[in-house]
Every structure is written in structure tokens, then in C-alpha cells.
Image (tube, rainbow, N blue to C red):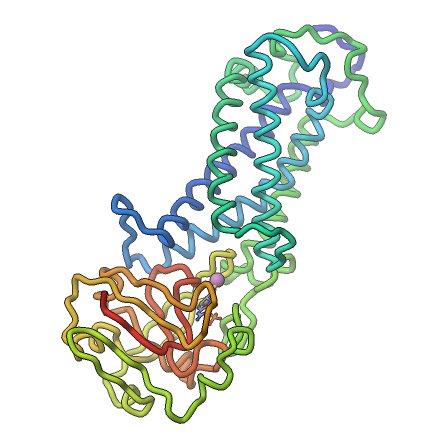
Length: 386
Ligand SMILES: Nc1nc2c(c(=O)[nH]1)N[C@H]1C(S)=C(S)[C@@H](COP(=O)(O)O)O[C@H]1N2
Ligand SMILES: [Mo]
């Protein structure tokens, strides 16, 4: 190993491999929790999602957003360390090397795409034309595939680089390419920075980013949620995602002839006074939005199972929830049979002991345990047993 600096160079596999490892862990957790969220929303036979523990989705989706956010500073640091290599000449080389470089190009673009679209979605800002969820889902396989190729190709270097303290001399194998002293001149600012300092700084920034977003889902970190768009503020202590005005239900929701239609083997309609006259239950259940925020509420209403029994519904059937909202992506949702059967699932009329506010879904809404917020249909108009 030839080096002119007294300080160990920052462009070192020792440093890259460590930052890469943290980034890899974040990306892996983000990918897996993303898959969970996807398959809850697009059910497939082999994926069973339970109703309990009631907070599980809150945790998986919280982790999805936290690890995604944490990956941003990690990715930036990693790119800052390796960027001269990204543009190395010649572009044409041995097949293995070309596959490696192609996989890196795909990897970097896919990860940037995932982190950027995820962040924009949290911010409710859609400057892109494509539909967020399908593209974000499809691209996750590209990112993970390219990541696995990258790790496989680099494994010997990674192993070597993770062996021993980060500020040790260079591992002998730098990808088979000898490092000439003049090959990657260090910028002035890097001289004197030890790799360990870089690692600590990176972890500190990553920690702050993660905490700032964790605050939107972990109650005792609420005060730290200065970066996240929704942090537990909202009527009745729960944030609002889509308002009644945005959903176009400000009139239909308060219409005097409102009635909830429930269709099983028979059809019944329930006016609001009739719903209130049925036995009421109170449950503490979270709204856990796909965007990573969540908040617990104390919901009171009719147990869905009781309502379904009144229309002679078969408990092995899924149930469709139809909102007064017209045409929104979440105006109609399907509740799997295990959720419809669970006595924690309510058609809620109240939140925090008060009548449901119109933005929380007045006259009534679905609230089920361990379910993505996006499927907790507000302003119910019909319930159909499938
Ligand atoms: N009809 C209808 N219900 C809906 C939505 C919607 O757009 N339309 N948004 C969902 C989303 S994304 C979330 S996170 C929860 C939020 O409920 P809240 O606004 O009462 O907190 O409502 C869900 N219910
Ligand atoms: Mo949501």
C-alpha cells in the first residue's frame, strides 16, 4: 500500500464498507417492511396478515419510513466517499467489471429513486406522473436485485475491509486495482479527518434524521418530530389525512337522510340514531398511516361482527367498505374475513368520547386493529359481504 498522507485516506474500502453496511441494513429493513405493507394492501394467498398484535403495522410501517429516511444521509456519505470511482475510465473493460459497473449505476439510480419518491409521498407532493405505490413497489425489486449483485461482487473486499479498526492501514486488496498515490488526490478539507470521525458524524446525522421521523409514530419522541409533516396534531388528538372537503363529502356526510346500508344474506339500513342505539364498545386502536405517522385513539362504536350478524353474514367472507366519497383511491376497500370477525373491529361513531369529527369520518368509519390507515375507510355509506 502506497500513500503519501500521514492521515489514512477517506477513500478507503474500510470506510466505504462500514457506511455501506449501515446503508445495507437500512435498505433491507425498508424493503421487507415495504413488502409487508404492499401485501396487506394487495392480498395474495400465501401472505396472511393477523389482526393482533394491534400495533404491528404501526411498527413495521414506522420502521419502513424511519429506515428510508436514515438511508438518505448514509447514501449521501457513501456517494461522497466513492464518487471518483463512479466516473472511472475506461468505461469498457472485462465483462465482470462491466456487469459490476452496470449494477452500480442501476443500484444508485434505483435507490435514489426510491428514497426520493418515498420522501415526496410523505410530503404529499406528487411532481411525477406515475402512480406512486405501483412504481415504488416495482422499483424496490430493481434496487434490491442490484444491491445483491453489488454485495456479491464486493464480498471479498467487504470482508477484508470490515476486518479490524476503521483507521487501520488499507486492506491489501482494493478490488484488484493498485492505488497509485496520485490517483485520487484528497481534497484539502479531508486531510486530518480520521475515518472514525467520519463514521461518527455520519451516524450522528443519520440518528437525528431517524429520530425526527420516529417522532411521528413513537409517542415519547413527538417533541422531536420537527422534520415530519404529521406529528400527532389534529382534531380529537389524531392527525387528519384526507379532509372531508378534499373527499367532497361535506354535504353528504351531514345529510339528514343519511343511513348506513349493510348487505349480507339480507339487507338492512341503519340511520345514525339506530346505530347509536346498538350496543357500543370502546377500543384503543391506532391509525397507522403508510406515510409512517401513527396515533392511538380511543374509538367507540358498533362491533362490526354484531352488525354483520344482524344481516346474517357468513363469518368466513371478506367485507367491502364503501365510502360516501366518490372516486377517491380509498373510497372502497376490502376488509379480509379475519378482520371482519375480530371483535376489536368497530364501525366507529366516536373518537375520544366525542362524536367523530367530520374529517375523521363522521357519521361513521371503519377502525380495525393492525391495519394500514389507508384502509380505515371514513364516511361509510355501505358495507357489503362478499
Ligand atoms: N374514504 C376515505 N377514507 C380514508 C381515506 C380517504 O382518502 N378516503 N384516507 C385514509 C388514510 S390514508 C388514512 S391514514 C386514514 C386517516 O384517518 P384520519 O384522517 O381520521 O386520521 O384514513 C383513511 N380513510
Ligand atoms: Mo394514510
